[in-house]
Each structure stands twice: as structure tokens, then as C-alpha cells.
Length: 284
Image 1: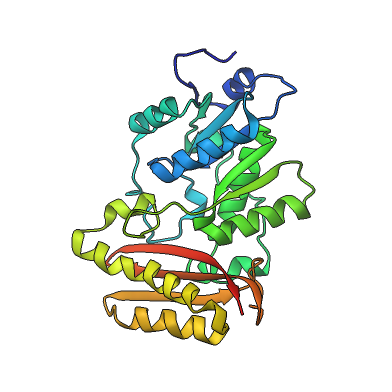
Image 2: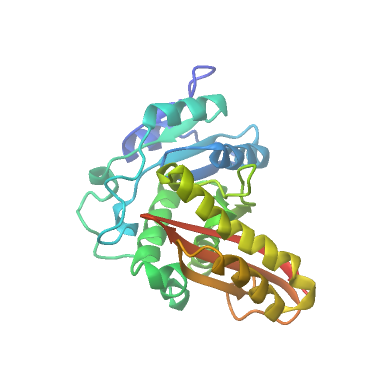
């Protein structure tokens, strides 16, 4: 039974979740997060509410160890549960599902995981082997547990969004996956929980990521070569930025077309912090 006017119901186990989520013919939605909620998450929650009101909105908070590789920031990933609950209360979330690792993976490391296919080894998957198998596995589990009509994801993690959509399509899952445009700081930096790692000087370097994307998008009428050249010129002026990739693809992350809709993506490391970003554009 959902509480009224007292903020979200907080549940920690799948049994509690099953007891709490109402059996309803109304539309329902889930927003999956790793916590450290910011204004970008607020936009996702608002999008969920717009899709299903007056149906319930669930937010999941779980730092998923399966998607972190050796030497990545699992242990230091920001955790701010009380502040996250306050955000959920402010946004009118109905249920917060916050399991621990033993609850999510009761049998230990799962033997069966979701294979992301060839795209899972490209771009972020090349830099982070096994990352997307971990992402898709936890997303599939959370979809099964929360049973939503809609699952809302931000476009900042665009490769993740594409792969989640493919998983749902290829495995005949019932949920509809909704992408929400990237939310940015006033200076253009894409909102991310990892931004809080950045020192002031590092933040200035990180702005080269979005500036390269915007420069590429501005050159889009001139075609793919102009897009990449404009963005690379910006990145070359930031030697403190270690660029993983700067690529142009079609909206499904296949080979970029010469004209039409496309997606420009970038990833790079500033100090010890790895950031990703992307923008849609129209070529030609």
C-alpha cells in the first residue's frame, strides 16, 4: 500500500517491493539510478510522471557492482541516500527501491547475464570491458522486479539507451523505453554524478567535451568530415584531456550516414574522472 502525502515508500527487498507496488490498471514508470541524484534525475522523474500520472512512479537506487571494472570507482562512487530521498520526496516519487548487493544478487555473482552483442564491445564497451553486460543484467532484473509500463533513461548515456532498447526489442520484453534529452549545466557541461569529482581547473578542461560536440553540430550542414574536423580542433586545444573516442554514428550507433539524422559522441578522462557526452545532429 502506498503512503499518501508522506513522501515515497522506501523498500529494500524484492518481497517488500512486491507488497508495495499496487496492482493497478494505471500506467506505471520506473527511473533507474545509482543515486547521487541531481537536476538531471529530476527531469527524468518529471518525464516519468508526465507519462503515467496519476499512476505510480518508482525510483531505484542501486550502485551496481557488475558494471564496474577493476580499478574503476565503485568504492568511491558518490552515495548520498538521505539527500536522494529528499529529491524523490520533492518530485512526488511514490516508491524508492534501494536494495543492497546481497538482495540484488542473492546467489552471488550471477552465472547468467545479458550479452550486449557487438555494440557492447565498442565505444564505452571498448574502454570498459564487461560494462554493458553488467548494465543490461541489472536493468533486466529491475524491469522484472518493478514491472513498469515505461522505463525512463537519459540520453547522456546514449550507448546504454540504445542497448537497453535493443534488449527489450530482441527479448520481447513488454516495457516501453523512453529517452530524455541530456540536461546541462549553464556552461554546457552535461550533468553527471561524477562531476562532483572535478576540481575547478579540471572542470574547465571537461568543458572541452561539450564544446567539441557543439562545434561539430554547428558544422553538420557541411557533412560528416566537417563535423569531425570542427570537434577535433576543439579537443586538440585541451592537452590535459585524455580523449577515449570522438565519433559520429547513426542514431542506432551504426556507421554514420552522409546526410540525415546522426549522433556525435565523445568520452574522455580529466584527471581521475572519466566523462561521456553526446549530441544529436542532422547532416547535410
